[in-house]
Length: 240
Image 1 (cartoon, rainbow, N blue to C red):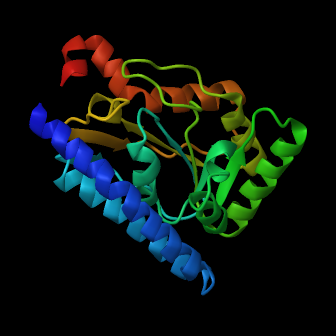
Image 2: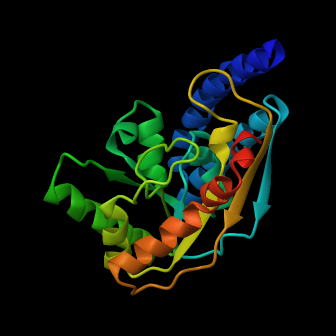
């Protein structure tokens, strides 16, 4: 346990200064071309992936791949780690995220140039219109859109209903959905200490556009929570 605490501390000690360096490099690259910026952001995600693997002893076991192109990629959200790993999992995605993160100094500037869709639940109709406009621009550019439809991190074993914004975006954009289930929360709880082990990732079957709200929410909810559902059938899996 003491060694894992040291490894976790070292991870944070390297990740945050490294992120500042990548942010500065990203802003410089943004002045060159969007593609240059995308390469630097992907490099930052690769840097984080290597820290997670070599310092924390966390591996990724992935079943399936996310197809390239304009898809709505709906990802289970249990920990911070998948918000960065999604930049490797999906090719140059536009990410739906809380307005709070987009307003962060330096990192927020990089995110806005790279391509994000900010969500401000307190701003009302104007924010919703901006969200839809940015989504349509991403689709027109042929870029996938990553969304965490639960809206916030969910404790292991829980499967809450999806936020209504997901179905609204699905209906407005008319994009097929690729659901992604994972179980990162077992190894990545809140706080400093992270656990070594394997995070499982399952890329689900693509769901077509045009379904009614109840149907798309039901299918995505089931796909995202396949690990939770299997753990409920076999409770010992939660402790793996």
